[in-house]
Length: 102
Image (cartoon, rainbow, N blue to C red):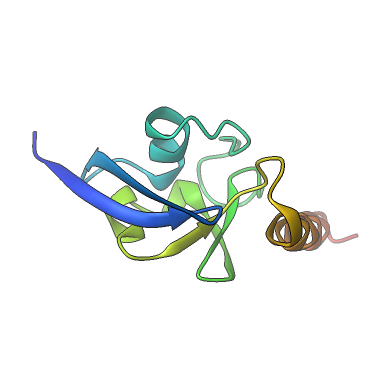
């Protein structure tokens, strides 16, 4: 199986990893980069447990393939990330409230 080299910025740090073309960004973040704050919930993008920011926009990492992260800026809710972390938490809260229609 072919693996693609991916270079991107995650939580302000430039990273490189290898991923199969059919690997979700969720799995790559957890398995290749050890970012366990990204969780798998429904696997269909409905619950928001896998929420990340991609170039500042809220996305579901379970719906993206890892190679799509090439050259992009990814944000998670990993600790010690300052203002970027605060923005991600605020967007995640908005997403969850929207999903539950609160």
